[in-house]
Length: 163
Image (cartoon, rainbow, N blue to C red; front, side, top):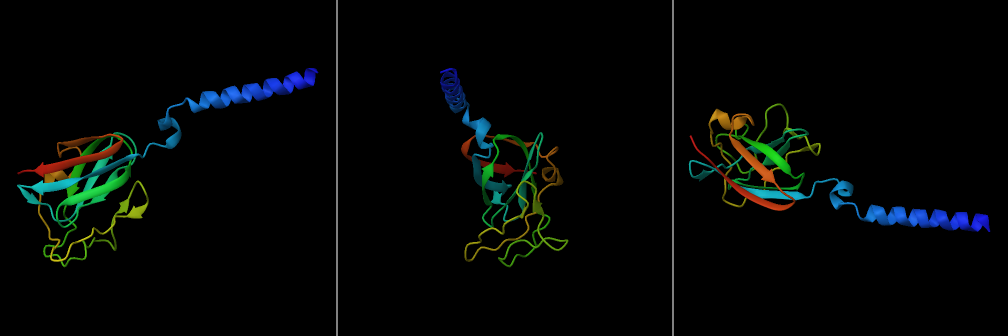
């Protein structure tokens, strides 16, 4: 009889533990990459027609996002948080051929969050990716003056860079 009570107590304890775990917030169990971003980057009112945007958190790895030929961008699987945002168009050819930017050094930079090369953006027919020179201050997260509070779910923001 004692053994039967002990077995029942163990099962009841395991059940209580399971019920307690079910009450935990989902953010603790899920990892945290549950945000997506999209928007457009303009410089002096015109689209930035290629390059990259980098989101740099206070701690952790930066997220590198390709800019499409129309200045738009989108990225999924971003961790919510506050990011400093920088932009770089140095690797875009002066006269594009529609195939995406050529990167010096034998290939595209690595996306430091996912270990993948930056995807070549989709370029609609008739659009040409060409270099849009932007001021040097936008190339570094510490000097760009741009930040983004990314929240869970869908986030949309346009960036209007100026001289």
